[in-house]
Every structure is written in structure tokens, then in C-alpha cells.
Length: 232
Image (cartoon, rainbow, N blue to C red; front, side):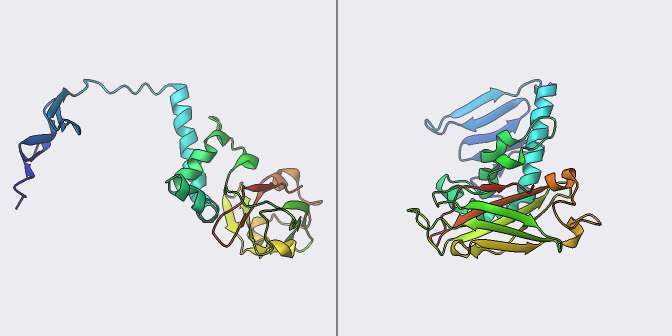
């Protein structure tokens, strides 16, 4: 049976009684309760909801759809890289990702991948010295540990996220230590076109589809800003 303090008025009425106040819709009237004065408030429903579907409006909606999709594909990366930052701004990492990257999407569907933010924080970054995809499909990255910097610790964990845009595939690699100075990963065979061996043999369009992102995370869970690593 319905609660005495919340009794539906009629099955076809989208409103409820809470004490002596009505909340919801009856006919063309919308009932609510003012949160400050606690008085009953009534307003008329709009006769028409304005939704012109202009070109700019549609473009904005398409951009939002694109950013939601990319956020979903890059979940495993931003769950780690944006965890602490999202908590600080009181958002989930999905919402934080969309907020930080909203300007990286154009109305015509293009994505500015080098500007994508997967992590944000005060930890000192590393500087990449060399990137190479060798004959066996192994990606090798050599970086400078920068151990002399104030916020750099040798046991900071460096994460690499590899994203293949044309196949919409991504992978967050197990971390290595900042002090290691190098990271190697075997590129999955399905990510490479037949005959791909080294960056010298890859077509430029195929190289451009690879996007590498790195960030560091210390023992307290704080991260660095995102490091974009171009594969040339």
C-alpha cells in the first residue's frame, strides 16, 4: 500500500502528495515546493519545447558523442591517471576526462590526439629520448629519469597507454619504475598491417594512427601531467 505521506493522486497524473504539498505534473500545471520558503509553487508547462536542430547545435551534440565514446575507450587509462585529480575536483574520472578534453574535438569529427589529457597532477614528468618500433614489432621507449628534480622519485611508476585510432583499440601497459629509464612492449599482431616491421617500413598514415601517452604515479597516488609521445 502507498505510504500515507506519499499518495499517488491518480494513475494518469504524474504527481504525488507529500504532506499537504503536491509535487509533479497535473494537466498543464507543474507543482513543486520552494526549497527556502517551503511554499507550494505552481507554473504552466511550456506549450512547445524549443529544439531547432540547427547546424551548430547538431555539431555540438556530435562532438559530445565523440568525447563520450573516446572516454569509454580510454577508461583503463583515465581511471588511473585522473583518479586523484577527479577526486580533488569532486568528479568521476569520466566526467573529468570530458571536461579536460572538450576542446580537443571539432564539429566535423576530428580529434586533436596530441592534446588529449589522460592524467593531471604535480609529479615531475620524464623526457623521452628515443622511440623505436623494431623489426619484431617491439616498441622501445628510452627516457631520462630526471632524478635530480625536486618532485621526482626513483620509485615513481611510469605508465604507457598505446592507442590505435584507426582501429579504436587501446592498452594500458604494466608500469615500470622511473629509475629504469626504458620501457619495451610487444605490439599486438592484429594492430600491425601485413608486412609492418619498423617505422621506416610503415606507411605514414599507419604511423599517424598510433598515439602514445605516458604519465607517472607516485606512492601517494598523485600523478604527473600527460606526456604525449609521437611515433615517427
